[in-house]
Amino acid sequence: MLRKASVGLVVAVALVAPLVVDLFWLNLLTLALIYMPMVIGLNVLFGKANLVSFGQGGFFAIGAYVSALLTLQRGWNVWLAMLVGCVAAVVIGYVIARPVLRLKGLSLAMATLAFGQMVFILVQQLDVTGGPVGLSGIPAPSAPGIDFLEPRNFYWLALAVAVLAFVIASNLARSRYGRMFHALADSEVASRSVGVRVDRVKTLAFCFAAGLAGVAGAMYAHYFSFISSDTFNLELSLLVVIMVVVGGMKDLWGAVVGTIAIFVMREYLRSYQEYSELVYGLLLILVFMFARGGITGTAKAVFRRLRGGTDSGGGPGAGDGAAAPVAAGPLPKQEVGR
Image (cartoon, rainbow, N blue to C red; front, side, top):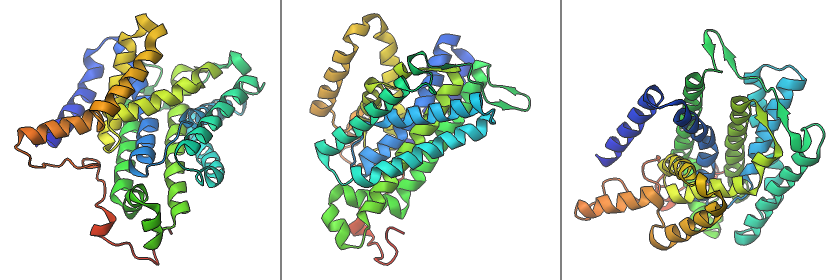
């Protein structure tokens, strides 16, 4: 009941919001929806496969610059350029996944952070990306009878992309690959023993997160019609991680809640910008100390207590179609990882 009510509330707010809010809040909500696919991708990578990445800002930048350059310098159709931006992020993700995913824990986190910083330095120094000045005049998408320069129309586009990303991630979590992700999170050794091709499954999760970050980056570029290297700094990657943790790593709805919550909080902290990093750090500490399930996990726990301890749909991963543990459904050895 709680889940249905929550989903109904989110749908109602998403549909009514652009009709009642002013232009400022409409732009804020649109920006949150643009970021949401990237947060959803990291939620799958971090919360399901238990792989840490502090380099999502790098893939965000790749999607943004590839799409922007193809439309500005090659005259490509915007929709096709955005798709290629996503593919470029996936390809780069695949290339770095093979060596990087051999690392674990802090080493993996540092390697992905280094990748994000490398991309930041490259887009800042290369002439083709406009250097620190950036690129301007990036065209907006177009469709018959629809003007995406009108803020409400772009809101609906961003909402559609975010919903599509959520549905794909939810179906992935329900699939046998979702079971493999959970198996990896529990134990790589046990996963190998039942035939899971660990390297391939890790790469799939990493490339999925990279692709969604690329989509978000392309959307960002064509929404603002301007990008510069300052957007893709380390703070961006850290902010996405904070959104996942605050919202709840074990539930895809955590990505939705975390994105909206952090964007709203950032807006109220704008007058205290110099203290924003301190606030983010304190927020992470508080979440890890007192609410490790994030907002969604804590809400589920409170609801279960109010219901007298009965579980109405709230184990880790419930609500996004997360698969049952591997023990509940063994994976056929000859089919795993294909």
